[in-house]
Amino acid sequence: MTEEDVEHFMGGFATSEAPVADQVTDTSSKKRKKAEDEPAGKKAAKVQENRAVYVTNLPRDTNEVEINEVFSRYGIIDQGADGNKRIKMYTDDEGNFNGEVLIVYFKKDSIKLAIDMMDDYFFRIEEQNNGTIHVKEADFSYKRNKDSDQIVSKMTRKDKKASERNRADLNRKLAEWSDNEEEVAEVFAPKKNKWAKVCIMKYAFTIQELEEDPEAYLEIKEDIREVAEEFGDVTNVTLFDKEADGTITVRFREFESAENFRDRNNGRHFAGRKLQVTIAEDKPKFKKSARGEEDSSDEERLEKIAKA
Image 1: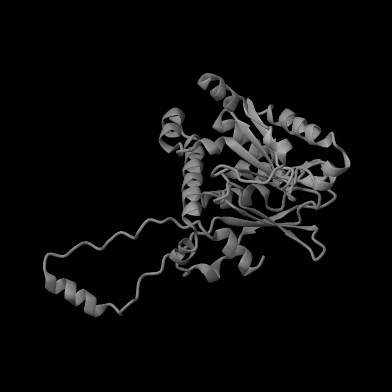
Image 2: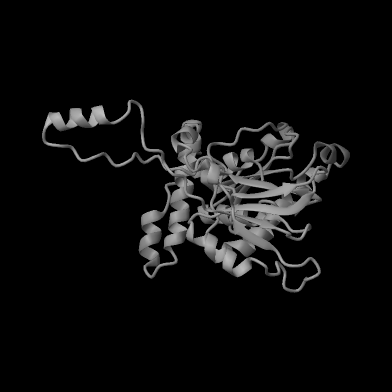
């Protein structure tokens, strides 16, 4: 686990709230004395809260989906601005998973629970040949005095908006564990635009596949739609056959369906490739041929009929 990894994973965690201002004194003399006593430019450093655990000796054939499933039992796992879970799987020199992972929780209390329940315990109770895993609090001691404003300042406006939505979503999920589920869900529900119903999938196909098999275009779309419909009504599946990273977008009728599809399929394997699934922030802009231009969602067709 390198300092660069920690910087990347912990970046954007700090809130944008300003520190509480000191109480204003009644006389200007007290203000002047306070200014004289404090060294110029010196401000109290913000302490970055550690909410991560470091896990070792995991089975080499595990994946992000399984790790999330196991460790989310002990608390909500944090999300980045892109909506992906903050789970960092480490690899060896050959690019293979080495059994070590960094997991960042939304709340610090989850660290102790994860350690108590999983440290020196079998990751898969039915498979004990690999031995037990080891879970400990990640060491961020050298970052304690890191001013989080430096991290926040590096985020774009779009990243900050996405981060705020994700934090609201995580707060909502956390609050739903309370007795007043309906009330807190309404309070913490993040505002969403219409593009949040669209999932962007990458590495779902290769250009070579499409070139070698003329029927692959429709078959791949049908396979993706069949999987997506398990999570809710799908209004459109678009395959961008000019994108080298195998991009497909799936539009759902409901926001929740899109979120569930992302959570269950991000990191999973499809046709031998590891999928990357995220929620769209804006209208997807990818390249496609004239064949791709023919794609039209149910909603778009209904709008055209209504205007006719």
